Image (tube, rainbow, N blue to C red):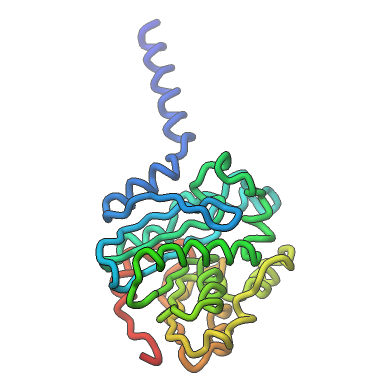
Length: 275
């Protein structure tokens, strides 16, 4: 009887741990990236140290750049997360499905990189300052360092969710971006926050404000028909202002965090406007 109780106790503790212990997001990212030949790197960019995953095998060839979403910014509607590192890293999953010779994934500031190496990281950078000028400048600087190293023939940006906002804002600053794609992109953060009835982010830039600046850039914006986080109306409003080279593709039965990676090889083949 005593042995049976002991075994039962051990089994209960094991099941509790399995149910309550989350997979380490950094290890999860390393695992899925390495399977696609992408290696983790860190790069100093402005006040931040950014985490990147890269497969850069052919200098001079096109460079596909993937920008991660906002990550785990909140634990609840009013509870800020202590660490914005994404658990699923949808942006990284998209990068792993890209067969291009040169693929670069950039995490957002304060994601994946230990806070001890990111002394400037404060929760405001994954809440109200997530698209602040210094954030966009840091991503832009990191991208420039890879361009200087690789000398790609073209630069193609892909942004998931909040990474879509960053992709638009970075594209508006640069003159070497050849195309832009967003997946479930937050292309009007003011409208999204108003729709969710949450506080505005006056310290953050808004991608729709620069829609006219990227209007000649070939671009595709993918939205899930069942997305309740960034409704399709947001992308539709942006595309209307980014004409004539912007198009919207609505994916049936797809939510914000749906299995975009499974569809990505096919979606990547979609023709870009103005090309």
